[in-house]
Image (cartoon, rainbow over all chains, first blue to last red; front, side, top):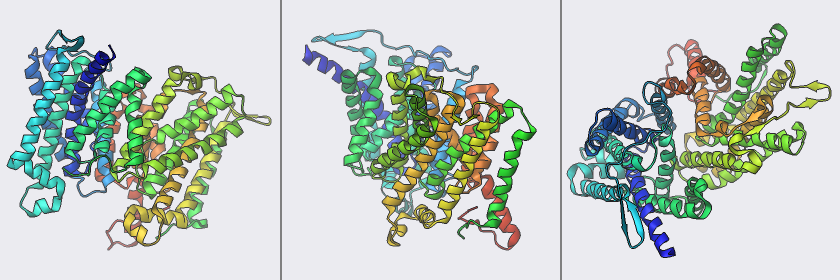
Length: 290
Length: 328
């Protein structure tokens, strides 16, 4: 019976870790390329869920199309954001980019709260796959299974893109050495915009996958922001493998910690783990850089 | 140039405080006095954020959490244990300084950007603990019925007495911050902001200076929080959240980061604007969000910074470079 409970929670942690991985990958890519801790990332995640919700309930699109539409919309928005806000600040003191990102986050949140937009109420995104699978006493909802499969597929695709395509390697080169990349003829301005676009798409896909198992609200972006920042610090800021490992570690800590100390404090467990890790290893689990 | 405290630089400040002290004699409008007291409390909070961000260049995002700790300490001690405000208040300040030291010991081991993110997480933890520790803090219900302090026959809950308590406290804070800025410690902080490595080669103990400025910053937050608790009479956890830190950050940016007058100008202006926007409640950030962005993009020095630039431009028309070290 305890073994069954263990594997049950392990599956829950894998699903949660998958979502965290996608959001964290977007954030760590942006940090690697721009050295900006993009606080607005949580806002993009939240906005992605709302775009999907609108596509599903107001346009009546099927789930897969809503997912794609949300990804494309947020990719474009993130690219525009980079061009309008962060590109002009690229030579400003570092703190200014962080503050601008905070401004973007709060603006997005406030717009969503307007009564004629979505308001402050919690909303439910319908799941495309009703039903539960069961084997050996362990159950998993179809939505969670979808999360695990889709997030693994996207992570695989992202890995292929970063490692096996010319465009992807420019991102990695820029993360390693921005000036060196420029000297080699890489258009760093365009790569920055591309990276922001990818991070926006990843955030939207993650929120659309996760929203059917949780509620949508204007403050969901802030909560996710904090967790994902904890993840990339854990993993080493700018580290792509670190983001994935950190995401699953946090998910495991949250799920199993929640069992031990109660669901109320599950959110605090992740940060407590972060405090402990940073007290011991200030640079995080992996070296920075891809 | 390093700002020095002397009669010429202190005179405008003395004039401002004397004029402020005369305000209750000319108006008994409770709303006006209420806004003024709130502005003074949040100005003190902004000064706390300013010594870290403006002088040392460090963005610390748990500031509202420490404000909350100061407020809750006063609330709990006076309401539940029957302590005198005058003992609870300094204890709250000391507690915030000690907790700030503990936070700094861990957080300053992180590098660069991790620090701000780490403190943001700590701020959330503080809010969570306050919200869920029902037996001590009242949890979601908060603390209700915190009494206004008394001193002899003076009841600070009546008339304009609290206005003067806040004004005197603000005056002391401004003087203290000006003293810090003009001291060797203050100049070392400015050096840290420019380049930590260079400061280190000049013999400055970077880690120790960071810890000390963290303690000062969190102590000022606790000081403001304690005043807030007895003035409002009610404590809820919302005031400790990151959104509140960002609001104070906006006050600072508008007024001018790193200047002595910036926190006062920015808080007064933005709090007043916030009062006008109260009709739209949660939607303040429709205005505040873009304002944060525009400030860092086009006017990073804030209002005080623009004033400084204009003054120097007038004295030396041929010189157009911005003075990096804006002081008093």
